[in-house]
Length: 269
Length: 168
Image (cartoon, rainbow over all chains, first blue to last red):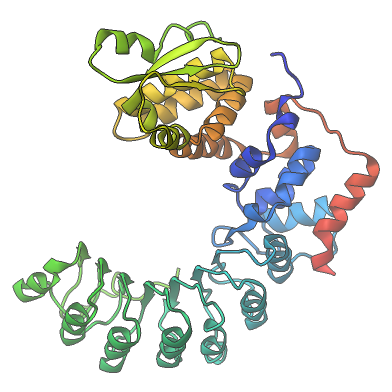
């Protein structure tokens, strides 16, 4: 085929539009090494607006670690460094971060993100130790544009966290987590997150009373997902109260634990 | 290669249904393409805005200075597929076929879509290309795109430094 140098001549905004759909692994290990124009495009902050680390393997024996160390002749490779690199490339314009679930994230990483990513809209938190969870309320208020927060388990600092969100994150509209939802949690959700549109509490312990509280209290709710919960059954009353919500998902939820411990645990993986 | 691109035109269908409103798109080499107004404004924000600024479509001719006739024909052909299908499956498939068969044409179509602000088609095409590049090695990308490494030794050093600093 003719036109050998066409890709180098492609307009930069088109190239960036393509490359920004690749993840941080491709954007560090292949894209910058292809040719000059690809390298230039890979340094554009738009390519780093969405940082999805969730599916990457940061284990010392994983492919990412091995490839990165070999390519850039490093003695060591670790998540905090990779995050620092990606956040620097994002040039304070990062809008979404999905942390890896289990391995390698420390509170220092979250502090870095709170300092360097003021435009953050969506955050998927890693699993943190109870001691680290206590620090979440201190940083969450820094993200004035935060709209969506996801975490595996309800943190011990949940109520303080919602207070901070209420004070500082005026566009907040989506929450996903699982845990034991007590009355004070339900009241906090209803009172402190007035613009909540999306709520997912699947696999939680969610007593019927709290579910009904959410159904009548969260006026803006468009999507409520409470699948595989324990503590309520989707009876006529529950379904009737959920009619006003565009999407109401409650499959697999039941009143009691019927000793099927394989399916109703809050699965951390 | 691009043999079929010129025949399949929106102009043909507009003659069959004369009651429909049409405008003329002029490619950079002067070729004229008669297109259905609804079909084109469904895709192109630029033309939508132009029609609204001009206050109508009567006798409207839109010169597209950066778009050659074969590229415009291919773009309109893909718009037709997109307009006829509610979901993106069919047009995604067509874009994939184009990418595999005529990569250079694909680049030009992408540039043209960007130029006339055909946002959803542009996004879809970018995604098709990005999916292709996902997980490819440097050598695989170069081979697929038929490009050569144009770095100097100094630039390679610089790239290493750009990626290594965070791990000190």
